[in-house]
Length: 218
Image (tube, rainbow, N blue to C red; front, side):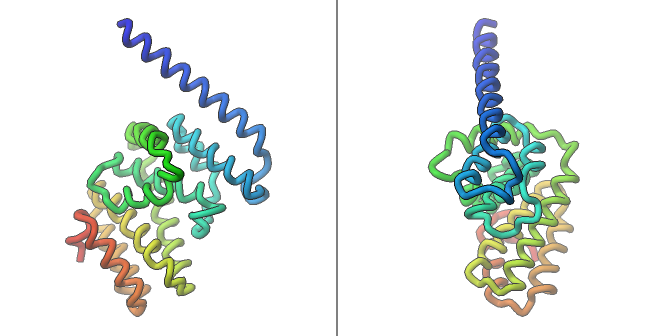
């Protein structure tokens, strides 16, 4: 009982600290993300991470630019972070999802913040299935929009990143008993919309070949 009370005190102190951090960041930021300077964008990323550390995925989702399909490595990194967290939540942080964990390494585990990343993942694993359909709708729309923007505009250097979100979304579908949807999504992007983009198709092959969940998709 004493151990339980001690742990409860620690959790209460942590929650209080995160609440204070959020209050500070909200006061410092102000305005919309589109109006922010580079420095304020860094604080905005910190705010999103504090929300995720508090288990407030829905609040973090409400804050991001949901139309940002590019700029994920700089000013729109917050969108990439929340997108990745939604995929992780949908698969309950399963270690089987090699592509999704690759996205986590690219967008979430930045600046050596391994401890913060692990804490965020613990909160995501507790996600109830109630929001699952909403998250899947967002993930599909964002994944398709990112692929379309990169490939249609022939940004060849980014084809790998387009293939990675394709693979991550398909892993989430497969682990939620939606393999038929994953096959359909793969066929749409590889065999129909972009069947003449051999470099992109090669990146898809690289991603699917590196994931046990995706390797058998036809």
